[in-house]
Length: 428
Image 1 (cartoon, rainbow, N blue to C red):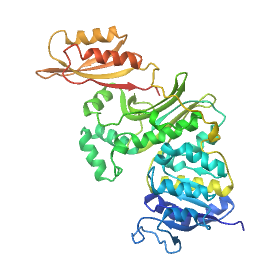
Image 2 (cartoon, rainbow, N blue to C red):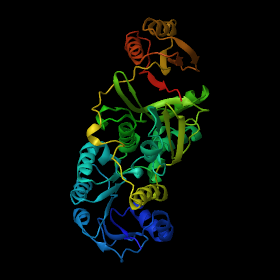
Image 3 (cartoon, one colour):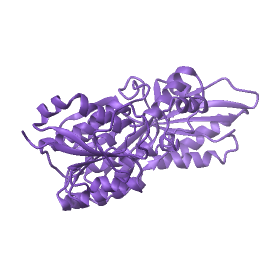
């Protein structure tokens, strides 16, 4: 019989416990599919005494994950602690320095330190596998690094945070505002300990940075992402978008242009009839476009014990089979330094504003848009109050610069009763 692949698991939260359960339940199936047993040698977590619903008495315990990473009876260090600094980073570096392969679900660690860790791993002849770090159970990393390796990728986009998609979906379903649905998501346990990681778009941006590196052969550049969360999306925007055949999503988009690498994670409108427009609840979706394959859509659970543990085990099984390869699809030393670029590709925009209820107000706004070269495609005016009139405009395709100029000049007209809302309408 082949020698077992011995795991050391650091982090016994939802995902770590899920991995333990899969290995116990599917031991025979895993061995049949990989050609060798996969076993757990030792584990590490903050508390030994916590009831996790699984028996851990058969495994050695290390209070220090760095000590776990250095154990001689561990072949693969499975890092499920999270965080871009501290124990997760220290233990991962220790594992690589000890010649061990690493499997991680830690998108923050890779988004911030991915290049340095990839260089360390490849210099030592080690692997870092991280399917579980992006979109939970969706095999998007394997799709990009393996299945689509013969394609020049032209664009990657997707909904990569289930909490934000849940909040936006529930806003439309219930008619309740953002604050109410934020509290609902928090009560259900959907939010991170720091909620801004979710609603501020940071969690999803970490994932986008990883996908960008693989898709376009660039060094990870998390700081180059244009980032905006969903906090400013009002129920009025949800209703108005639906009225015109759109849905609002926190959408990540990355593409390489002649100016550099565009990366943005921000609320956008997408057609209701598109795959992204039909994505409800906490589900994730990644859309990949390549020169040979065209467009493919990957959809599935983006979080949770089962889906994320499944992704961890996919990496473990590949290592057990002896599959090797560079961390980001090509050697780390060949990855290009990126030049961050803001999106200049023309797109239609959604504008919502409240105008002072007086003659000529709308004409002034139309004039400002025209002078900036922004053409109106559709316009609707809703029932107004005694002092202001809500107006909704959808533009023809225009550049971001032209829109910014128009918004700045609107502020000088004296007819705005509040700050306008501007959202890009993404072609899907």
